[in-house]
Length: 560
Image (tube, rainbow, N blue to C red; front, side, top):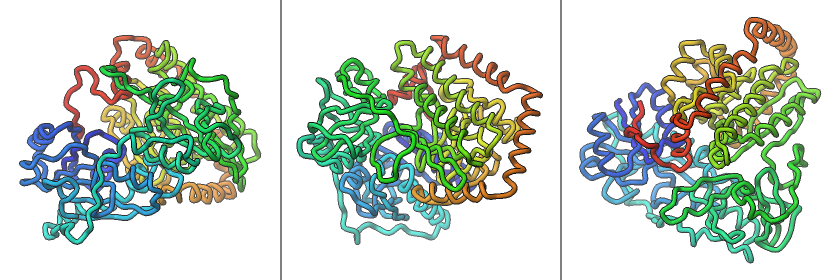
């Protein structure tokens, strides 16, 4: 069918819906719309047989839904209505939830139901992680059923008359407010997790107003509720009435008439306001019973070293790349046959940290340092010849993060992950040895198409073209245990010894043909020209991306 996706942003769910519908051989166009007129123009341009809205903040005009079936993906079970459904579910500590695909009508979220699916909401998981994980899985399950039912021509959606409606207004900041004098750690964490990554929790701190983003429990630090006790790896630790929480990111409140603000590591955002508190070292290895925050962890089991990392939004700053490199180098000193890189769930990596670059006094210099630091991590992976390296993608990967994964010997990807192995949409020529790894994996023609088309792809398509070696059809929470099983089997496999010998030979052959340094130098020369050219489009694209604005002179947003 000809399907038109309309969305308020080309977010993770919209990308996944586009990729998987195309995998199912539908002709799919995607347009980002701001109001009803945008929706009308999109429909007129594409003449679709079906309209699907994976994430839409505006109402579909009556003259559109009255003549075309428009399917709305609502992140709540049948009967649930309102724009903050998932926020409220996480805030209330619900453990079961669902997604409904319903037909657009005059009353928002009240149309007949085409399909629905249930999902779990694991305790301790943030709203944004759930949205990209369990909720997205349920959304695709329900949407596949709805599209198939529509295509049959015989299915009629059932009205919501028999379901008790539960409508709630948008969750306001006064409902999200943290009372540091009375809230327990669990209360604070649920409040923070229900607002991650948008809109954050508005709070007063050190004489200014900030949106707090992210939250992790701390079990050994105590103090006066609300005060900052310590810092670690850019995060701040604030006391609660019964413990403390780590807050990784802050976003300044937007000044009246000022530009939109964006998230930054908390200590960087606070700057000179930050009080003189101890910097706690980031432990690489932790006892299983500990509750604290660290972005990188190492664990060893059954001949496998696991370098677990999880950076907010998948962005990796210069400092974070250097810490990851140190952890990886440590892992390579251990008596293991396999090293696994990746988090337990959610983002693998989206490459360099655009926010830290934008906030720097010299963005070009910071961008240059960030790119080289990520290059160092990728080069370390590519030159490891005494053990197998597995990149474990429990979630999405993009740009330099996708190239970090591609550098591994094997790439294992959760079935629901979306990959964006390109740089063009940010106006960058690319680095991270992509000119070496991509042709080696997918061939020169597909490499050229990936960079030119700059489209998201499903894990299944990535496996088909050779970018991914194994797709694991697991739940988000089931991904890490399955990876551990497979990695242990790989470490015990007698054939691994022979694979290592072949790997070492191939690396030496490739180095003799053309050194990795030559690939790196060419890529960095092109990146340098862009970063240090004030007129290069990258700078406007970076600013617009961070502030969620259209870059100057941008054409209407359409894809496919």
